[in-house]
Image 1 (cartoon, rainbow, N blue to C red):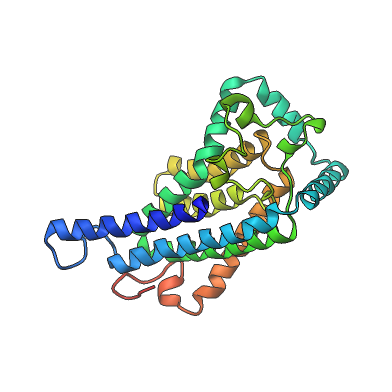
Image 2: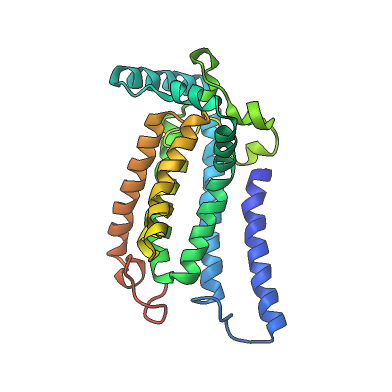
Length: 280
């Protein structure tokens, strides 16, 4: 129940802040810092809140079948072993010898999904509004694809397999349990396929690299998905195949957003018109 209330509370807070700013400013028009109307801004927040609520609804289905989740994970291990991709345990064992590296990876895993992703989406909306709607549509497709994966193929992450040498680095070093009350608000223990961390990192990293002008900033944003891939694997939260599937979902979402943009090319294309020329 709390997991459902979090996004709803966020939506209420955003709406309240917008109303208070308009009331105290004494202006009857829209805030000058918004590229479009406050109604449009609230609508975008509501879309993501709805997607999160849908995730919460489906989340219980994936969690209700742990036997299938472990069976599917063992099948992934067999695939990786047969293709030479089963390197996760060796990588984690190496990283465990470097405490600082693990601490950084744990911090990034816990915080990047919400902080970085949300910050980039807000930045795109406020500073590069004509690009935002294409990225937004990518996220809608990606969330839908991910939900299908979680329902059809619930998968236990590597951290659930100590017999294979894996360690739950977050619990080991930070003393935060994945099954604690707060953490369960934001994590589905069997939502490994696809890796939504990797998927989201691609969907914010590449657009951000395309928008920024400085070469060093472009390079940093292009490296961001690689960093997240390393983080999800080294912390024992995803198999490498999960990361590959997360990248595939990101690619499929690009094609989905492109197809959708044909229905409203003036507003939903990557190179859409100005706010005065199009609405969404």
